[in-house]
Amino acid sequence: MKNLMKTTWLLSFFCCPFFLLSQGIQITNGPYIQRIGEDEATIIWTTDNDAVSWLELAPAGNDSFYATERPRYYNTSHGNRVIGKLHRITVKGLSPGTEYRYRIFSKEVAGYAGHQILFGSIASSNVYSSKPPAFTTLDRNKKAFSFRVVNDIHGKNDNLRAMLSDVKKENTDLVIFNGDMISTLNEEKEIFAGFMDTAVELFAKEIPLFYARGNHETRGKANTGLYDYFPGSNGNFYYAFRHGPAFFLVLDSGEDKPDSDIEYSELAQFDPYRDQQREWIETVIATPEFQSTPFRIVIMHIPPTGSTWHGTRDIARKFLPLLNKANIDLMLCGHTHNYQFIDKGEDQHILFPVLINDDETYLDIKVDSRIDVRQKDMSGKTLHTHIINGKK
Image 1: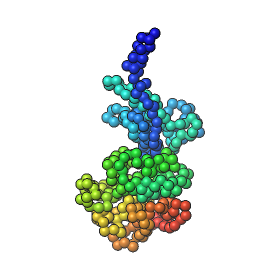
Image 2: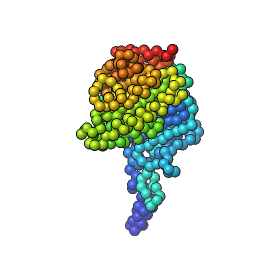
Image 3: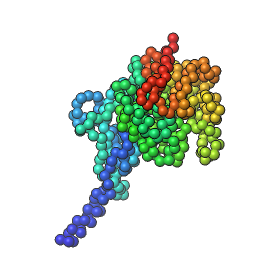
Image 4: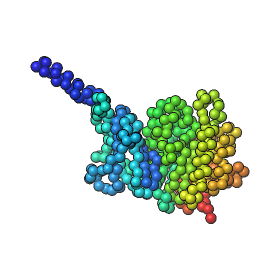
């Protein structure tokens, strides 16, 4: 009997090693919406162990998510499904202005036996006792929409919560983080501890989030991993999108000091990066889509005025000649931690309004036949109102 038990244990060890290797798996962060357009969306989440992950999608409706088998979407690379702790699933072929429900799954990779993968347990979002999260694709034909902008949070989750606690799908189409959401990125988990866990709790599972990189996100040993969590639609931190009557140019202002500054440890290459970005801006503003849009809004962390620092000067020198010819209606910036509104004509070098938001207020913006901007404090009190009328 003793020998039989020993043999059974050995067989279990060699034939079923995943029982020993598997520690169980949990979804640790997310999910949240990224890179959304009129016909696609990307869902991102993380797990504590390596996994193969997929997304199930369903149209909007009151039926149970279990009503029928839902199509699965995987993250693949060069013909293989991706294994990892960061899961980024893009779904294409969607319809504009359409709501979709979704559910996420992660199947633990417990180990390997040669080339064979040994799978463990599966973690998934709950659709049994909770409504599945749902997002709505962008729609250029929408007549009016609202969005919110915050910046320079620097990991202050209490401030972020105060600024975004009332964000709902019913009153906000999208949210923009306009840079410096953390001070330094040394570990990728700081993205979630610094602001994204709060964002997911409040809105980001269902409301699209657009990210403009600030100068502080370029710092720290994990800074090059930031894009994996906030992928732009064109493979860069600068990108464009259209929603309703507005075309958005999201620009990456880079760092604020010269590339040679000792603070950057000889790694900074932001001058040539801004050269590259200038060429992209020139291409975008020449497109019929940009030129035919009623409103054109620029999102950029560092403002192109108000400072003699190198970053500001380089931005002004490279970007303003193009933007001044592009009939921009409004530029939204941060960085200075001080509110300032520079109306068209107040700065001879800038031919459009620039609003610089501070670090303890947020912007509530509605776009319809005009752009209505309300700067509010953390209690929701309106401090300043700016109206940008449409072109005649």
